[in-house]
Image (cartoon, rainbow, N blue to C red):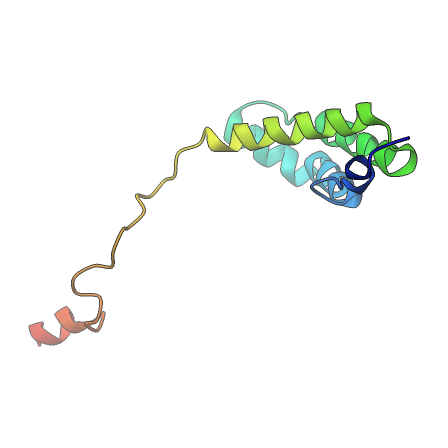
Length: 109
């Protein structure tokens, strides 16, 4: 008999989301973009594995599928944290935030 916490667990995404991500990854546009940006072909297999694990969890409540899905999502989140932001985030607004944007052009006239 499974514990109530085990049966109430939900995947972090709907199973259809994994399938949608897989289809997007396999699309011609995305393949071209990934090759242009990174110089390699996109690896889409993990999205399909995640979709299958999600279906296995929903249909049969297999703990192996749940654990594999959790591990995959954790690694995906850890990979996203590796990227640094492009812009430095502000702690407070600029000193002249209240001035009109084109005030400099008006003074030149």
